[in-house]
Image (cartoon, rainbow, N blue to C red; front, side, top):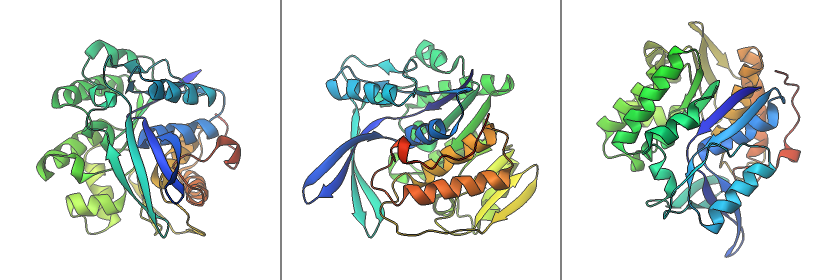
Length: 307
């Protein structure tokens, strides 16, 4: 069995279902990607989530939730005193914004222990992480994580990176640019969002985003573009995907993460990049018709993907 490992933060998600009545779930950008990858990959792949949680009841509920949905929890470490983080979704005409309670979450210590982090990644045959994964790490932990990724890449492990740039989580623009660029150098697949890249790197169009990440060594790049044309590159050939259809937007939470999961599941199953983009877009267009980041697996359209 091949091992897909997604690294990052699991949080409690609170979404408003009525006035002052909230539904509780579990989510987080790389967890969301793992969720959709698990729904679409064949049983030839295991999917595990690597993170750090607390020993509190809600952390244990998160573990049970992942286990029930066939996402491996054996790579989760536990902090003796910290707890799981929380975020609240605010919706306005389908567009989301968030409030967070995560400053002292267990996940912020994810990369603080070398042996724990090495164990999390030791058997991975494909690794996915994000800019948020990096933002919650300490500077020391980030360096350790990069060193481990470098070793894995040299051994031929596939590595995907969603920059998912949230400037409020970083100390300054210079730091985020340097860190995102270093992460891209260590990745084989980069999945940026043009809106983020334009704000951070001042890219004028998605083609500039592609060329910048190509210069850093990425072999496959797909630029998500907020419902507009999707630009991609594979084997130095640029692709423009304009078969875009979006209807009945309810909640855009998890749109990019579900795209990532659908795309990675397709690519890892040997599907051509054009078809992989189509499947990923189709999945994301369904996800935004539901509330919350995670659409129940039995609701996800069963795409014909085989490993």
